[in-house]
Every structure is written in structure tokens, then in C-alpha cells.
Length: 309
Length: 287
Image 1 (tube, each protein chain N blue to C red):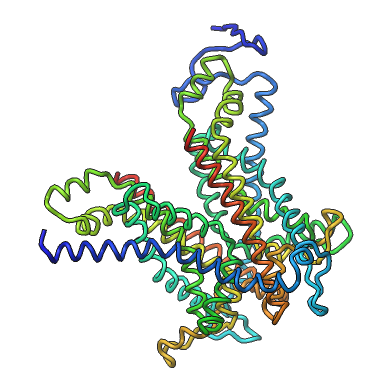
Image 2: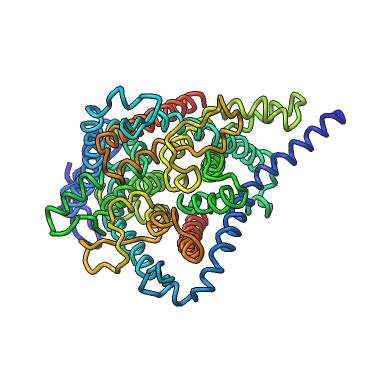
């Protein structure tokens, strides 16, 4: 059936018929040149973005895989064998320490905002505004702050601890925002049920709300982990670039004050020195794989969250 | 409720409020430390000489960061030219053109792109894009163009995610109404949905700008870092972020203060941008 629909701009032909895709929704067919051009533009853009993505992935894979030798995973870093193992361990240590600081604070803040605070209080508005500000601050500014505060003012030096504290502040808004979203997604009936059974607010939060928000919160934690793994600018002036694992066995807790080069910093040093390009490719590949694993974990959790609700 | 219960509730309330106050304390500390360490340097150099000085020569105690402010603005503008059209069109594709399967295939790729470390992007730029530019145009290839290409690529995930979310949030009735009036799918998307999602799309762009102007490692690796206002896109350029990261390692005295002051100027840029994002978001919510 063909109808002629008048339109202020043009008189155009619109064919009504069964929808072209099987989703069952009506779709007007595209048959004006401008519509075709727009459609083409959208497809080209999506294609270009995907090609660029595949190019960078393919390039890192193709060059990184052959460069990935067992020597790179030796425990000791030497100038002859620029092993990435110490940096890999340091990355895990650094990420663990910063999350140890950021997660309790971020989740606590989210619980306060969602479960305790009065709506529209000035304190809440200020917390939200500062969290948004923190999220926009570039990592080099965090690095400068860490240098001025933790390294110089507190005399912690270029150390694992200075770096971890700097990263903790950097990922705090991510943990806060994702935890807040996860808590908001918990149905109110859970809280009402718990209150109805005589539980107080704290008990309700700890026993009812928090467990059901856990997958969402974990997703946020994984996101922050990814940010810690890839960070350079915030660490280069706070954690330094000594390519050795802090000696926890020998120095105990004081090893926290040792400088520690993470994987991303390692990669930056290798690439900017320019002597070890093969090793840099391999490090890039390891970084990519880490991020991909973290993302896969996060999206598996979100899927589970959706299924549960 | 027992006395112990109320006490515990009270303690929990105070502790949780304290954790919420941490972000306020963090912003306050960052502001205090940056400004306290940067302002004396600016005062000694003189604000006009610092902001508009064309020469950066730490050896002679001459600190003018104008070329770097221009550098940051140029690089960011370049990133917008490269990243914004592709980003918005890709968001439109994912939201309104892609089949469910293609969208669910592309989304993890975009997320992975968002998670890739900036050194990996910088390294890719250094070993792929810089040699390409060198082949096209005489010179080292380390240039404004290389930085803009890499940064444009890096801000894609931010723009795509934010723009797509706001496109997805437009009520279905808008689209259906437009179709019922005889518009094609394309016309409905571009003339009805995109304007309806405009505040979100613009917020995504400004967030991308925020990321571009603050990006450090990728830019340092590909931009050449000469302290000169570039006269073409093939010239090298130094951004404010690059200035800090290149010289902070060995700077002392007034030089160090001038670098912290560079950070202060960058910080003010970012604060203004954050303010803009929040205003746009509020306006979008109000509508």
C-alpha cells in the first residue's frame, strides 16, 4: 500500500508495510537521498571506530606475542634483562593497597548518601559536588598533589604508600558513584521488610541492602582496579620508578616506604628510553590482557546483577 | 530498641558521615596544597608574565607558559575535531541503528577502549602514527597532528558512552510521534532524538574535552614537546600537562614553583569545565 503524506517541507512517498526487521516495530523505509546519506554516515563512523579499535588491538597482539619471552617473567630486573615481573607484582600491590583505602571509604560514603542522609541537605550537596570535582581532576594534578602532600609534607618519600594513597583519592569517586548506583537499585521493599521485622537501620543496611548490592559494588571496584593498573601520571612523582619489589620479608611494614615501579610506569620508561621496544610491546600486551580480564569480570557481574533483579 | 542498639546506630551514623566527608576533605586539601605551592611562584614571576610570557627558559629564570596554554587548547581542539563527530555518530549507531547483536558485540570493545592505559595509546602513537606522519611530511612526525589523532581516539569511549546513554533515555513516544508524522527513521533520529538528547550529548563532549586537556602520558610521547606556538599541524607542541611531567623530576626552587603553578592553571581550566558539565546536566534534568 502506498500513501502520499504531505509535509511542510516536501511531498514524499511513504510505503507502509510489514516492518523490515523482525522486531515487529514499524519502521518507515529510507528512500530519500538525505536519509540514505545520514544512514551511510552513521555506518561509516561506527565502522571507522571499530577499525581503529581492531587496529590497535591487532597491532599490540601481533607485536607483543612474539616479544613475550619467559625471560620477561624473571623475578629480578637487570639492565640486561628488563623483566616485567617486579613491575607486575608492584602493580598488584599498589592496586590492592589503594583499594584497601578507597573501598571502605567509598562504600561508606555511598551508604551514607543513600541510606542515612536527608534528601537535599547541604552536606549531601557538598559531598556530591566534591565527588564530581574529584572525578574531573586529571591524573597529573593528583600526581602533583601526592608529591606535595604525601611525598614532601608527610616525608613518605617516593614510595608504595604515597602512590597508593594518591591512587586511593583518584579512584574514590568511581567507587562512590558505582556503589551509590548499586544501593539505589536495591528495591525499597527489602528495607521495609527488614524494618518491619524490627531490625534497626544499621542491621538493615548490613544484612539486607549491602548483600544485594554487592555485585554492583564489586563491578565498581573492578573498574577502579583497571584505573589503578593503567595509571602513570599520578604515580611517576609519588611512587617513583625503582624496578624492584619492596622487601616486605626483610623490612616488614617499612617496605611500604620503598619506591615501586608499576607495569604502566615500566612501559612508559621502556618506551621513552627507546632501547627496549620489544619489551615495551610485550608489556603493552600484558597491560591489555589485564584490562580485558578485569572488564570481562565486571560485565559478568553486571549481567548477574540484572538477572537477579 | 536497646540502649546498646541506639549507641551503635549513632556511632555508625557518625562513621558513615565521616567517610562521606572524605571527598570534601580531599578536594579542600588538593586546592590548598596546589594553590599554596603555586601562587607564591606566580606572584614572584608576575601573573601577566607567567600567563602571557612567550619564553620558557628555566635556566635564566624566565617562565612564560603562553605557548603551553595555546598548545593544550590546540591539542584539545584537534581531539574534538577527530573524536567528536565519530563519537556522536557511533553513539547514534549503537543506540538507534545497530541490531541487538552488533550492539552487544561493540559495547565490550568500547569498554575495553575506555580501560586501555594512556601509555599504551601513547606507545601506539609513537610506533604507528608518528612514522606515518613522518612519511607524509618532512620532520620528526612528533606533532600536533599525532597528539590530536591519539587524543581524539582516546576520548571516543567517553563521548560514545555518555551520548548513547542520553539517546537511550529519550522517551519512545518522541520517535513514534515523528514516524507517525511521516518522517523516515533517519530524519526522526537526527531531527527529533538528537535534539532531545542534546544536553547529554554536550555533557559527553565536555567530559571528553576534560579528559583531553588533562591527558599527559600519551601526549608527552607523541607531541614533540617544543615550547613554541605551532604554525602548522605538523609542528611539535608542548601542553601544560607535558610541561609538568617533563621537568618536575629535576626542578627546584622557582622552577619547581612555576611547574606547580602550571598545574594550578590546568586545575582552573578543569574546574571551569566541570562546572560547565554540571550546569548542562542540571539544565537537562530540569527539562
